[in-house]
Image (cartoon, rainbow, N blue to C red):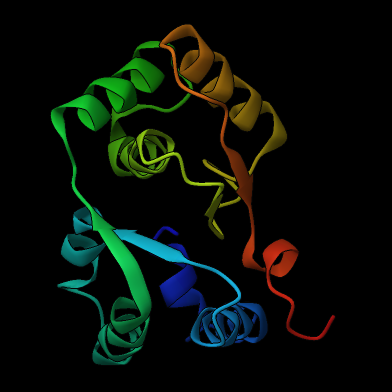
Length: 147
């Protein structure tokens, strides 16, 4: 999960599904992986977001490292011009999840992450570099809340 889901808990447009996903995780329906990148990104977030993040952090099965391997894969996404260097952290979230063999990366970032053509390109690079493809969905598509 990337940090957009955390912020979504505090955003009227997204809170229903972000909070639903948190409820699913607490109920044991999903195993949550966060990363040290998420830890860093929420450090300067508003208090409300940091508080919600602690709830997710306490439920996390694993906190993944930003390894040299993840940096290399993220740089490959940038080299293939899927994202620009301004969105390096988005590439790193995807790379960290890919290397961890996560089943899905959950994000509200529809501009740079949860976009059909971008997902195809991320997965083309993943396959080229010997990794399995990764599924990328929004919390609305993943949570069992309300369904």
